[in-house]
Length: 198
Image 1 (cartoon, one colour):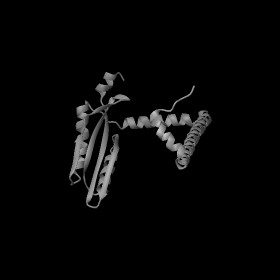
Image 2 (cartoon, helix red, strand yellow):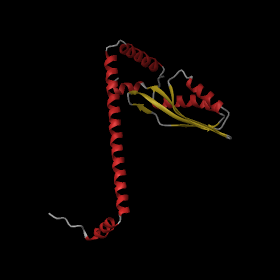
Image 3 (cartoon, one colour):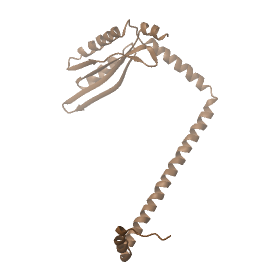
């Protein structure tokens, strides 16, 4: 079966056939494309080999560690740490009282700075892994020397209750000395414990 070239492509084919330079250029482009294609295939194959090797190494490590006593020791340490953290969570009668307590404590720290510092409180939320515990979140921001900012952060972290600072930004660009930090406090609410059946 003989294939015919579409009428619209005939002038282009004629020009290619009559121009050796154009033929050489197209051949060079085809060779470059083939070379690039094989390089990409080689990179993909190399990445796959590395991935398989890493998986094999992880498997060997797990096999080697599976019979070791260290896992039981780590489980015991993790349990002790969980109990220690649980002991740092204060109790409140309700989420609203927990927020008021946390806000009062943070306000005392913020007011003692003697600088333009803002305190913004957020709604309490239940901790997914333990419905009897609520997370109280707040944002503290303002302008202050970095050294004083770090002193305030150390004061927050020195709390006997469980407190976390998941986000912290400190800028000191000449006269622009600002900071912003998110602070989270955790409170156990017995009523929520009973509601969740724990």
